[in-house]
Structure formats: C-alpha cells, structure tokens
Amino acid sequence: AMTTHHALESSTLVAERVPLLAEAAAMVGDLQVRNRGTSGGSIAHADPAADLPAVMLACEARFHTVAGTQHRTIRAERMFVDAYTTALGETEILTLIEVPVTRARTGCSYQKLANKASRFAVVGVAVLVTLDADGGCERVRIGVTGAGPAASRRSTSTALLSGILSFSSGRPQVVGLPAKLKDSFMVMCRPCSCPQSSPLARASAAALPRPLAPPTSSQ
Picture 1 (cartoon, rainbow, N blue to C red):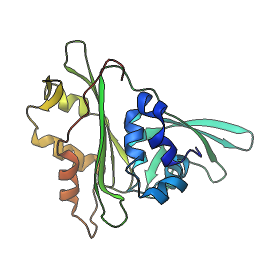
Picture 2 (cartoon, rainbow, N blue to C red):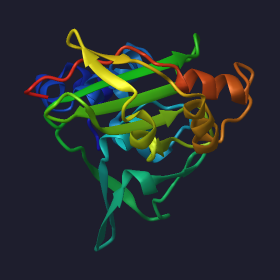
Picture 3 (tube, rainbow, N blue to C red):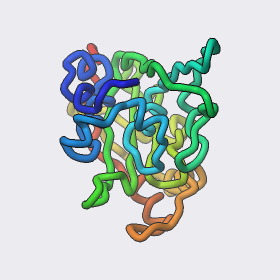
C-alpha cells in the first residue's frame, strides 16, 4: 500500500504482469506527485477523479486491511462508496493491495480526459478485454473514474460488447457501438455536473472507443 506511483510506472515486473496498472500510474498528476504519492493513499482517499480506483475495479483487485487484531479483505467493487468515502472503518488501515496478474489473450488500456491544471480525470476509463481461442470477445472489465461521485465498475459491459468487438490486423476494432452503451454509462456512473463538463458530456466521453493494446500470449 505504500508503493509510490513512480515505483509502479517504472517497475518492469508490473509492466509485464499488470500492464494496465503501470500505464495508469504513469498518468497520475506530475512527477513530484508520483514520487511522493502512494497507491494505498490514492485508494483510501478515494478522490472521485483519481486514476487508480478505476484500474483497481477493472483489474478486480482486493484490499487487505487491519484494525487492531482484526484483518479482512475488501473487493474493489465494494471499496468505493461515495466521494472521498470508502468501505474502510474508522480504525481500519489499508496494508496491502492484491492485483491479479493479467490473463492471457487480454488487451488493456487506460484513457482519460484530464483537467489541464491538476491532471485529475474529468473522465477516466480503464478497460481489459479478454479474447477466446477463436479471437472473439470473451470477457470485458471496465472501471470508470471522474464521471460520478465515486469510481464504478461496469459489470454488464460483456453483454453489450460481445459481438461488437472484432480482431483484425492484430488490433481490436469496434464494428458497431450501440447507443445503449452510452446510456448504460449514464446509469452506472451517476455523472454529475462540474465546471469542466455536463453529465451527458462525461457519459459520452466515457463511452467513446479508444485504442486498445492488442492481446499477446504472454499478457
């Protein structure tokens, strides 16, 4: 939990085993922030526009905590309750973050529309897409930050995206994006207004397709 963002972005092991985490860590704030800020601090603080919560949701991370002699594990989808509010108790300390190794045949990407001054996400989307043996879309995991009061995970995206994503020329291609995908983000994210954008603009930005790193046999 005390691992700095810079340690994550510069780690060869993280880049090989959980490339989405390394990618997102490199996009946190500026160099000074990444040198001092920690992964555990970002999670426990639960800023609605922080980058790592979306990644933890997409990666299905687990958070290990301690309070006196009591220990427990919190799944990422139960961690982020509201703005600056987590499932941590008043005397509970986050001690360890467990992030599963990325599956084989999985491509990933973290993209965000950043505030130019703070580099916080106006909208940030973390995506992992796992293909089956035939190159079809088998599993999609999406975490969204910045769009609402807390980071959230899109649990039904597989059903929406199956058959929409195809794999040609070594890169995933979007062959059709239904309007209901944007609508689903409106429901999931509970987007709110801010000086930078409207709720509809945030949901639209979250639903727009972005380049996805191609799956490899080692990922």
